[in-house]
Length: 160
Image 1 (spheres, rainbow, N blue to C red):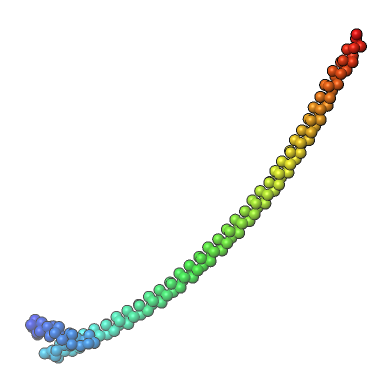
Image 2 (cartoon, rainbow, N blue to C red; image 1 turned 60 degrees about the vertical axis):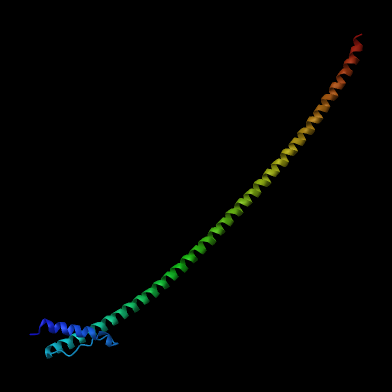
């Protein structure tokens, strides 16, 4: 059976040689027993395989994330373009409605103005006609009043 000191020596030696290999493999000194050597070889192989599997999985995850990000960006751009186009169409419709409403209001205002002007002209004509009629009536009344004293004078002399 291997002693605790043997494993500590192997671990310590492995730690000392870790930076020597640029591939990241741990350089392990030759073990003192064949079964330990076999176990270390199997562990090293398994570790290399796990590392390769982890790298491949990480690469696949990153690639899938990039594809998903591109799809999300594309979808967001399409949605934004659709929203902008919808807003543009809604704004154009609102402007058209506002212009149509303004035209209706303008037409109605013009009609009411023309109607009011016609009513003012009619009322001015009525006032002028009344003024003329009143003048004529007052002149007739004045004419009658002037003729009444003359008739009274003529009849006053008859009494005498």
